[in-house]
Length: 288
Image (cartoon, rainbow, N blue to C red; front, side, top):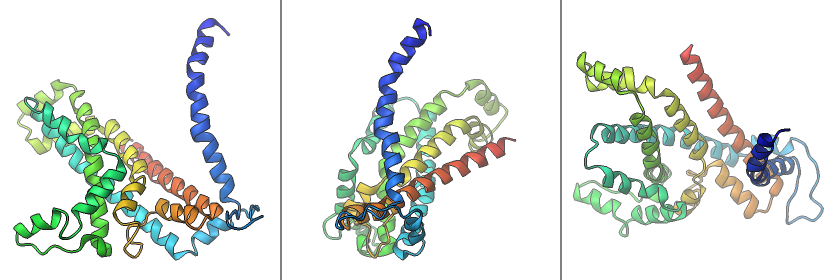
């Protein structure tokens, strides 16, 4: 081994050590606990039960509901964030002068701690306290009690998630737009391409790798909104906003059933992996 290789190993060793401590070991422990009946309130309950926890998930109506809600967050939140993120990024790309301050202001939601986001939007959606219903009343629209009904509560959590993460999507897509070659775009404009043709037939194909990365990141983070859900609705009303990680949190920290909670989180990771893998597969198939 030469000196250069030793230097490489010396530089990357701390990072590898941190990854092992913070990622690899917790995942191994999570999978291990998911195959046990470990409950903190029962002495001697740490026993190997194989896949029994996973079988129980599909007999648990609350777990099935949390899986459905998780699918909603993954699909709906990602689509809305990508749409508005791209629209904002394209507007900033086309109008470059005098937008630097506005870009910075738009990034503020992504810098706010998720707990604060959840509390703020809970206040905004509370009747006679927040501002949402007041502005709707100015438009002579009847405002519901947002967080008291399943459908409107789900919409409220989605609005909070979109508000928090759309600026980050916008920032990454804007960086991608600004890195595109200008010659093909200018040639298309000279040839008479309108704005929609320019976006759909040239810009989006050129940005496919960046769009793919952003979508995968948003799929991974789509279920990582536990603080927002907990601060706004605590998974209610009637479990309408309870994703699988929120349910796992309740099982693990309220009912102290570590084995079952671990199996729910393993399923949570598996769902994210499947969505990401299928999207990559479809994207690669589209290139052939």
